[in-house]
Length: 148
Length: 395
Image (cartoon, rainbow over all chains, first blue to last red; front, side, top):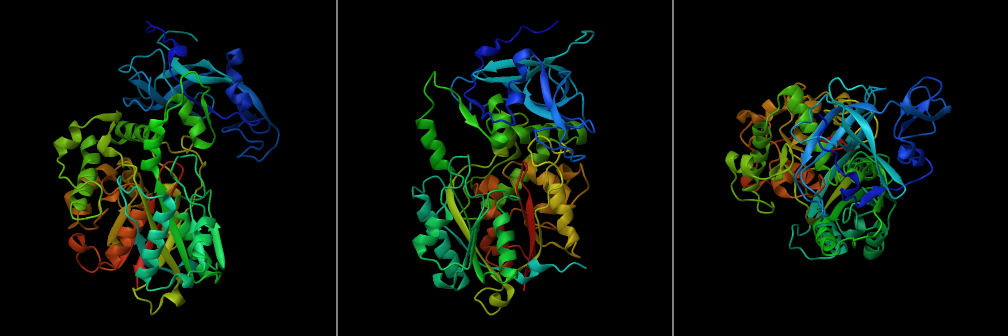
């Protein structure tokens, strides 16, 4: 059973990425519910953080491409320090590895998940948290037997 | 073989300002104090200084880089043949390495490299002046832009996550991290300028509050105000100076993987792997030749990463290595973080560690002096996407 859904909007977030022409597509990708990374049309490598050139084959033929949104928890930590006023403790910070490519990772939060339940290797799925002009990619557990 | 040109460079003096949390001095005064002390320690005059270097030039981290080079140059009326403020580079050590290249190529004879921070004062000030409710979010570039939006508001989170995956893969334990922390605290008790000097037991360590699991308060260094300056001289100029020259035997800031805090291919490590491999490529020395080492410990996990990368122990065995009593203690095979490290000494961004290496080689370690007249010292600096290291050899 999926734990009670977190009210994402209630999580205080006082810090957001500075949006520029190179990263806008990434931070606003969640507007249609999909996660995108810059992808090399020549060799298929995902380039993150985004760049106008592929670090593997040096092709300039690169474009944002939709990925499945599935990932695995590569590592995590339970934060117990109130770095800012209003932060609700504890919460999970994680690095997830995106299904499409080894070492393609995001630092993120795992939500809709008890702090005792998260583990290295846990399958997770993207869920977006809309703040100002940014859709933050967070991740929630994919439960056993659940087809997503 | 490649000519190892950094061997034409040497550290000839070091100076430190007042450091700590009750310093209460503007940053420019701290820099002036440490430069004046370093020049005097080297037996030079201010007018002998013809080079100036620092890293980073500016920083989004409050208090991290408070003094531009021009304020120092204009303030002291320096006549500089060469100067450089390095923004991107392999840790704060990049100023020493770049200065070494400047003196080895004859661009300058005596370069001042300073590291100055007023992080404690700035954090205190920001706490008194929080963002008002309802105001738009702060916006961040660089690594902060990939971490802060997720309330991963401190470098502790990425280091806690490296620790977690190392516990999972290698069986690293909190007691092993604690062994490093306790070694630092024992050494700090012998160092009058260290920040934290009260005795600490393993029980104290294990029972203190967790900040971001598995790292606790004692796994983190503390922000302070302070400045440290070095004189980097050409080896020719260094001969006959007041102190025996500490020649750079080898140095490296290599980075082969992605310049990123979370995209480095090996999630258990950092560019320390690359800098360490390149360092040993530049010398016939081996880790077992090193007499004293000061290894970056902004967080207790960092020395584990560095010591494996540097080959002091096998990959995955860093925890066992630091927990074995005959290795890193003042009486051990290679005494480490002999001044208390950053964990007990205070956060001087690696310059406190390099200073301690120099003091040990000059025999100025007082009550904490490593026995046996050490000649070779290794210093490594950096965590996250930053890594630089060098070996000093007393002439």
